[in-house]
Length: 176
Image (tube, rainbow, N blue to C red):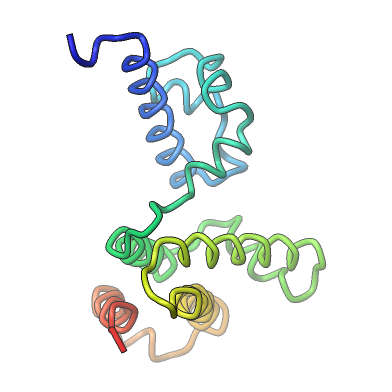
């Protein structure tokens, strides 16, 4: 009867909710995601989402965490982020990045998000230089985002999206 205990069912429900939350947050961002949408995607009542994870903010904090000590998971995540950032930016991301140098609120929001990403990546990488590699990865992705979408460097017009992602993957995966 493995997997049919009450605890096993509860764990499977919690996992479905977490996976649904990750999909919703990835698709709609924090502000555009509702607990009701997460519940619908997971096939549960909205009250179960709250019962398992508390608030939407608590669930978001869990949903964006990378597995600890999993360099391949961290690298896969970075490639996903690069793929998105080198594509069309969602309007909320565009507004936040554009405002981060002129609005203290936007600056604080971006800084908090990027600090969290550095900390999370650091825990996923192995080695004494994990924090440095995480800092360089997060900073580089921000730089690429600004160079392509805001400064509109002309070199981006001549390099296919897939080539950029592949080159960035090679660079971020390089061992020193």
